[in-house]
Amino acid sequence: MMGMVTVGMLAAGLLDAAAYTQLKFGGEGVIPGDDSWDIGYGASAQVIFWTDSGLGLALSAGAQIWDVNDDVTGYVEDVGGGFVAKYREGFEGDAVMLPLGASGLYRIALGETTSLILEGGLRYVIVNSNVKFVEAFEVDDATGNALVEAMSYDIDLDNGVVGLVGGDFEVALSESFNLFAGAGYQFDVLKGDISVVGIDSDVENELKAFYARAGISLDI
Image (tube, rainbow, N blue to C red; front, side, top):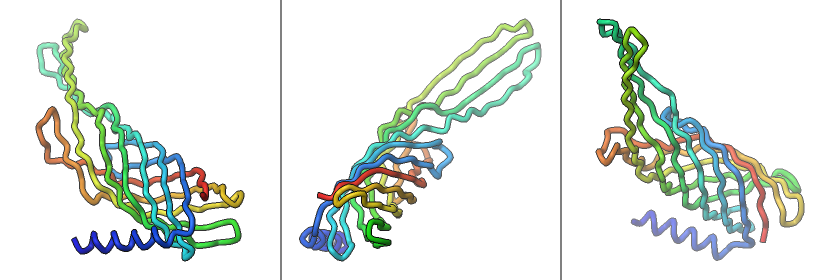
């Protein structure tokens, strides 16, 4: 509780001391660290309150789509009598991630028009799952006839909390218009539960990932 109060007081102090405000918009590519996910992409926006000392407070919101790893596993077995049994399973679909949160920033001037901006923050990630677990059974006979049965199950993913650290290289093209590009890493602080058709599993949803981003910022 005291930690939250301290953070709130520091944030209020930064807002009071803000010399100018910056709006930042960019696109993102995400490389998840958990094998359950393949790749992600999206966009984000920040409102940043900068002080003359180079410290900043950013309020952030974004939207991403993470594609699930759709590798298929299975087996083939000769069950005798000219019959062959086949089984395959895997995941399909994607999930929409909505990260909302705040960051502390520090600007390091590298030249008259270039800066390095370091960032550390927290995001509450709202997860909307479109992921399904799919399995299929097939029995083939010696004449080429096949009996196939396929089933799919909805996968529910709970929301999570991630921390992030990163840096952006910023170039000023005018007094108020800038370009930036950067990269960073997000790590799990609170993992969401995973359930299949309403039944909880022992596996948790991991959102750790490397990311790269680029975009524009406007000083107002």
